[in-house]
Image (cartoon, rainbow over all chains, first blue to last red):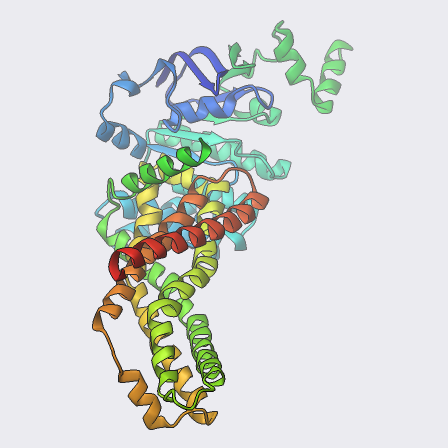
Length: 255
Length: 245
């Protein structure tokens, strides 16, 4: 579980996060939603330790990040997996080498064992064998996301972070990626935090949802209550998509 | 203030680069890859330029030696001195600032833009050490490039002078050996090593701290070339003042 206590972060005098307090339970897919510029990415980078909050603390399974020594912070980072918006796969490495990278860096496993583990996770994300020796530029966006997920879980992390994992994907592939992330969260019993503004993801996998607006936590709940909330900002965000507007009209018309 | 900030940031980057080391087995592979990309990949263009510039120096010296009292062996002497003292270490380094420097800035800059550097940091890897340190070590072999440049520059001068009929082979070889000061080679290689360090780190700085997208990667490469050249020229002056005057 990750607990966030009164996090504040400013850049050049402008406060981006204005005191966020929440928690992300283990074994659940936790979603951070909000419009562009709401502070989602800054918040996620604070959770990842890429940004140091100006105020407040982040507690990982009972241990506050700020109280960790540099070495402990690095050890914690090794327990984190991250799926970046664009995949962030290393261009100069093949798919297999990308996934093997964390194992090469942090384990003393033999090459044979590493290859076995890489095959295992690539199979888990349903990436066919012929793709394993290709470079990231030679595979599709959906496959890149799968490789990114495989790289994130290869070291059996305790925390999985995903920054807009569906951006740039067609709806069908996006749903597959969502389901994959949810299955992996249950299977590995990890704490997963997903930064998204895709309403389909909210509907599919939003076991816990927090809504950020202008750097403030405006609302929190789950996929079952987000469509029933009275919070105007959330309603406006949720029904900003034409599809959901039609659903809303249909609901109001009793269809 | 911006310049001061950049200089401070550059030195802090260097401190972190020599900080927490990447796993030795991974680092070894990275160093070999960088030697291949930065050094071996540059040999072709360096050889080509050195050979022809050496030839041009020889022809120009010959055409300017109109006084019959001045021995023709001076052509070789002048070619040797200009190639060893300035042309090979300094001019080739400026060419390398364009070739290798742009490559370093754009490759690290692209990694920044596509969040690959963030990916390294999230994994708990010292990204500066992982990306920049192998380049610095690979550039320690840069004197090899300059040695080849010196050799080919002199060879080009010899062929242009002798085949062009400006000087006899014996005169050229005699001029090549005249008043040779071994310390000049030391001076040339000292500055080569300093330039090697600058060639690896200044472009790396511009790539690592760049912000924006594809357009900014291009701009960062240009800026890096300009600054690397400027710093090489100033450093060349300082080293020459310290070692030769």
